[in-house]
Image 1 (cartoon, helix red, strand yellow):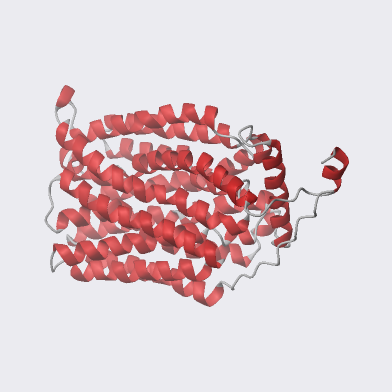
Image 2 (tube, one colour; image 1 turned 60 degrees about the vertical axis):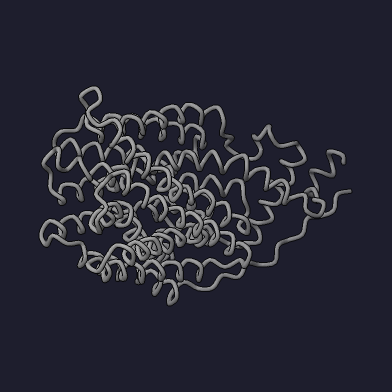
Length: 448
């Protein structure tokens, strides 16, 4: 193949060659991004486990905890869009390194919190530092995978939040039980310290390991880089016209519909994240280690659901029903948790597990929908905008549950509300989100 022919026509791939290249990219990027997301998720949600003893030690109410758990998402809201726009400008390596080191240091400082004001400030700061990581990775993966391959990549990456639940629960429980009183520190202080240090180290590795775009990937051969670039360009043409201007996208009702849908999903997801351990404790499991292992099993099923739903969505090239029906499972299961909570442990824990599976399985396929209507700067800012505004539900839902628990002594009525909100996600998707049909993929021109 000479230089002139490369300039005039994109390279053609042998049958199965692109599959092999994308498999190589998948295994190069996704496991490392999953490790980062596990660390981020553990540092974000370990508060749900440390509250089992932290509240008693510091004499705080459930309302204080609920506000502190949720105020993290205010930091998200204010800094997520700027972070994603910065990623588009300076690249993923620098952005993700800054984010990872920042949240790790903040988590470590959390061990010294003594007042609600300090608690609120550090939770807000944790949200500021972590802002941009999740939507940044969503944007980053669009640089590497065409539309028809993204749901699987998204599903594998996002399943790390469920895997973090598998690992984080037993880890936090073991630390709280085994190190309580060592060096004069409470068990929950050791959790913040030992779970923050790995994030700082991982941030340094990020700079050395990640590659911003396929054109920069020295671990791909020149031919592999050419084939991927040509395939991504064909994919862009097949998707047709999409909005590139961020300001113009704000006038698009579809973006605000997607914000509302994701808001409903996140309301349920954050409620399960921050109050799942509390629900387990309320059905009779008081040991932090036991609570951690029970939540670990629930999140193991959640991880399987995310991956399987992502694979199935890619195979059938359909995201709308895969998201809506998963959200419906989460809503019905949350309702069952509320109904079974006074009746006994087994039905409550089964319903809690199904709620985690349904809610988490809706998330990766949801992100197929914004990327089908946005591109360029609109994708960078729009994805972050959707995530930041919708994640205000992560502030409101835990705070609401904390207030209800403080005033009534029970989470039941709050769970009814959260279940109804998540059901709205399904109804909005089925009623207002149109079916998506991709144009036929343009064929690569044969090389001469």
